[in-house]
Image 1: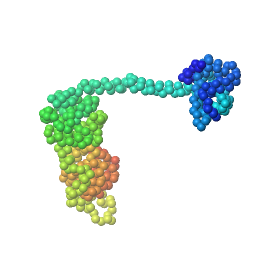
Image 2 (image 1 turned 60 degrees about the vertical axis):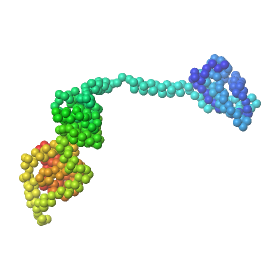
Image 3 (image 1 turned 90 degrees about the vertical axis):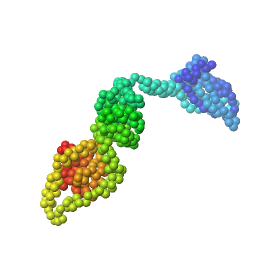
Image 4 (image 1 turned 180 degrees about the vertical axis):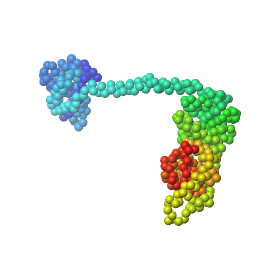
Length: 422
């Protein structure tokens, strides 16, 4: 009888049925057709609608408990909204099925097209995502891909160990030694073609001869492995300079600015050994330096014991003294030390004979000067001189503060020198 299924219907009527007795499914369907016959007129007669395919097969699902039957009725419809609602409401007039009393309640009328529309939207989202993932790349991605392929084509192999290197490794007088192939590729990305990788912490034998013929700069990662490689290189080969990536970073992930800054901040292996021998553990440096205090320097900083002397009478004595010993040689020494510290955020602490007592982070400089309680003649550091540091230096008897720049001027006993003046 029914010619349409719930798949092709526009609406589906959901109803619940409760029967005070035990009946079969044909009894329920017979009651639906029999008791609604002639109720809605010829155009909405259920038998005619089902014969024409506008009402689908009526499904009845019941179960019996304690001598009573209850379940659900599903009626698919391809009528319009109003006609479907009228047909659904007509089912609620049924009050008896067979010999038993019954009650039918319409729970809802489901618009099949809404659920189909939701299914279409979800599927469209999936298809669009696949299209975006597998679609054409933009112009920047194309340029990056082409540039990367060119860098890979440029990378070469050197020696029997087939060490990754740039194309200018033979013709260049200066070479850069890095850790791995990815580091060479990153340097090639920014036009540095004279790098070579040692592929690990052990130094290949071919590198010993290469380091004798070239000016070598070791460029390692800013981690424990980089320190081990520097130690190995300085022990086995003859390298000229050493530089490291910032702490926690690798050479392969540095930007062009970071690479150039690191290469400009390179230092000699002797300076590395000197720093290690003087510093040891950075956190213990202030206590280590304090043992080397030079006590005789302290008395000249308190020349006037009278507290009642006017301040203006003491100014010429304290300000004129430090400016006299400022010689060209001292400025040159300060300038060289400041150049060595560029990019390190470190500080050198000097005694009266211009010897380096130690090297500390610039952030710990004030605490270090306070802990030494004298014996500091000058301080050279990579940073800006602030008023707080000047006050600490005056109290500790420091004669010179040398830095990249100064935010304030000193009117007391400390003479300030900046990179521009040097």
